[in-house]
Image 1 (cartoon, rainbow, N blue to C red):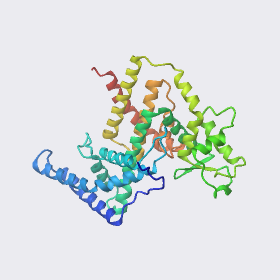
Image 2: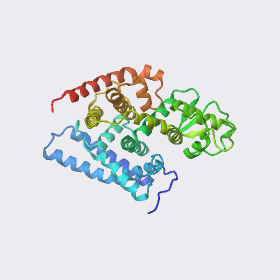
Image 3: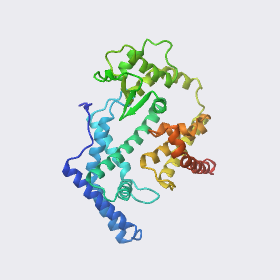
Length: 368
């Protein structure tokens, strides 16, 4: 079976496709507005819903193309040597679209209709390129959520390491992140003409280090020190995904030892953990759908609040040792520093956690 190419696949449509997508979005927005003034369940309401579904059918192929292009750009990010093929990517792209046409329990609207309505609410004068950019962002968030869930199930240690790497570089004066590239601000810029090191290159470069690093911070510092120390092959900047993969590979034996040293769980403990995780996911999804934002944040920030809450309560309930709330949000929200947390996010995040906890407690103590 043909393997998919690793070249860059930009999520673009033809001019005609972009215009067709935009016109359909406008019609969906107009139809969604009509639903607010039509009694639910009557014939007129059903007719409008059918018209919306027809428009969704028209833009489905465009959403698929966006999903496929974004998936192709994510190839090689998953661990475990997964072999991605064009067929598997096609199927995955189709699966990614499914959540976008599901109905929200809070409003009854389909997810993509909610997204389109929000686009025009935020930008009444949105044009074709605005719609394309916005919907591409919606597709990317859907992919990101699916990928995080898959990583959580297949390798939670890798996912945890990735987040810790992002947190570390985001809160260090030495590093700057630019469009997925981590730059060493302490290094000279004369290596810009060299190639980027991949994860395998970094493992080979750092293989002789003794003793090996024992934390994410030590792994990141070791990698960049070796790039700066007489290296004439690679740039002193790295793709974030290569840095994350290399840091995990360097720490993997220690992480596995720590995980196994806790001893096997009893069947009762396994059941309790699964039950806790299920209830946490239910609470997270409810908060995503129903939380009334007192301060309007963009969708990316709202999703970061949900993800950070899940991680915080998982560590609190299942690991017993949560870190500070700031660290959880910073790990999920790019650009969230200590200062921006205190100035912008702290009151809203604390309120979000409080209501999350109230819902969570109701689930935990509910009678079956």
